[in-house]
Amino acid sequence: MTATVDPITLDIIENALMNTRLEMDSVLMRISLSPLIREQHDAFPMICNERGQMVVGQFGSYVPGVLEQYENRIEEGDVFVWNDPYACRGSISHNNDWCVMLPIFHDGTVVGYASMFGHMVDVGGKVAGSMPYDARSIWEEGLRVPPVKVYEKGVLNEGVLDIMLNNSRTPHTNRSDLMALIAGCRTGAKRVGEICDRFGQETYLSACDQLLDRTKEAMRALIRKFIPEEPVSFTDYVDDDGRGNGPFKMTLSIHRRGDIAVFDWTGTDDQAEGPINFHIHEGLCKLFFGIYMIMAFDPEMLFNEGFYDLFEVVLPEGSLLNPRFPAPLGNRLNTHTRFFDCQAGALGQQAPHLSMAAGYGTSPHFIFSGHDSENQYFQMMELLFGGVPGRPRGDGLDGHAWWPLFSATPIEYIENYNPVMVESYRPIRDSGGAGLHRGGGGIEKVYRLLQSGEISIHDDRETVPPWGINGGLPGGTSSKWIIRNGSDKMEQIPSKIDNLPVEPGDRIIFRTAGSGGWGDPLEREPDLVARDVQHDLLSTAKAEAEYGVVLSSDGAVDAKKTAALRASMRDERGEPARFNMGFEPDEARQLEPALS
Image 1 (cartoon, rainbow, N blue to C red):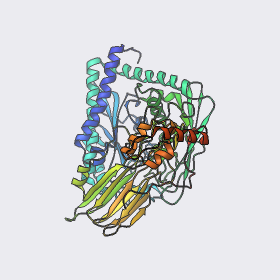
Image 2 (cartoon, rainbow, N blue to C red):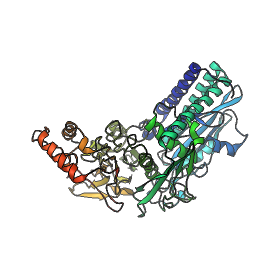
Image 3 (spheres, helix red, strand yellow):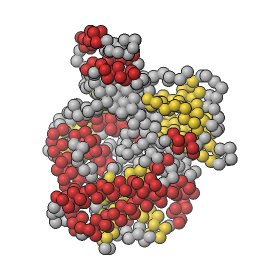
Image 4 (cartoon, helix red, strand yellow):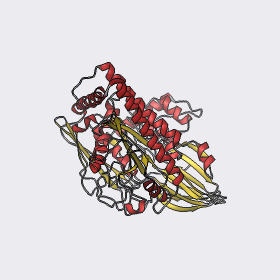
């Protein structure tokens, strides 16, 4: 569009779109049934312009790829749904994510697209939850649906819906969540129509273009300032693929060619036999780099796709990040989150004062399924969180989500709807990496199971710890344990397992990884170290060994002994390393659970 929108109108339209995106979320949360969407907010909305570019949202636009498949066969009242990562070129990355998209018409003209995707509790496959830890192909991970019209010209296609629900262990929940996604998109379409009514189509479309251009120019400045012309590389690891293979190397190189930032994953290991492969859409890959740079370097920027032309991405075919069909994808989040750690490590070499350490490195989940005393099927699934890393502005967060707007499932919800009692929920002592700014601690959650059934657990960072930066130390790794009813013996559970039989009274101890520290721990204020000990986030032994802080019997800092110990530790250590990886990939660091 050629019209220029004045700054005040542009600001009004920008805020209206941002509020619309939040309203889409609100509608979804009110209608959905599954705790993953309703309570944990595992869903992502966006609004695109008439070309399918994301103007507001989180995960970037996949709309152009769908439009190519339908060419001119898109009409008012159509609603598309899909979940097959390979059929939509990685716009969503495993079968559990159902994606909805609808065109936004105004006066007979397409002015944009509204879309949301959310994680479904179960989409079929060989295990409850549809994410088998040992899958060797995507055929084992549930029903795959290419982009199809679930509504055509406003009429529900009952056949499509019946097929999708017939292949799920939780059809009632899935139907509610799907209709909630559609309702959220219709809300977005309605609000965009109202903006067009108020300002006119031409003004609205021109405003969208200007918002994209503004983000592009702001990103151009960030690239010039923070991306070096000479390549810098960083390597991190995923523990294993669930089938006994690993660790898997992920290597990222970054450099600048003029105004173009090049992100090259050459050197990343080949695709895994097991389901940790991440079939990432190229646009989504650009988006992840963009959001990291925005949040690290200029959080005031509007998050949209305007900067895409400034990014070049290399994803080697057949690698962990670009697997060949039919590679399994169900547990790709172990790789997905390591993606962010590699970004932090690579960008941190150019601007270490603005980067952060490594986090807990996955989205660990716990599934408990079976039949209750009335022979009704139940299936509980919960995402757990770990340590968010130490940052330039302060300590990392304990037991916090990586993902925007995510939250923990309330314990009251878990206990009310499932045969489970949560006995404790607390940060893990000594799991946050030491630093000027301490890494966030992992969490320990203890479940007492009240019914027989089976459990599945998928996690990572059990072998390779989250690294520290600028002198910070690595955080603690994850571990899982079971105490059988009537026994005091703790048995360790692998970080990836399905269908482990359990009985009433069994206790599951789920311990997530912490995160790396930021900055020299010998520079941390001793009173902050004493506070962490008081809050049971840090042991007295670690306070002395890693921070050089000596505490008296009443918990107060012994200033004289602390100064002497820190001076001795500095002399012995010398200059701290830029990165502290902690351990080689074949080593492990596991903290003993507090329970006996």
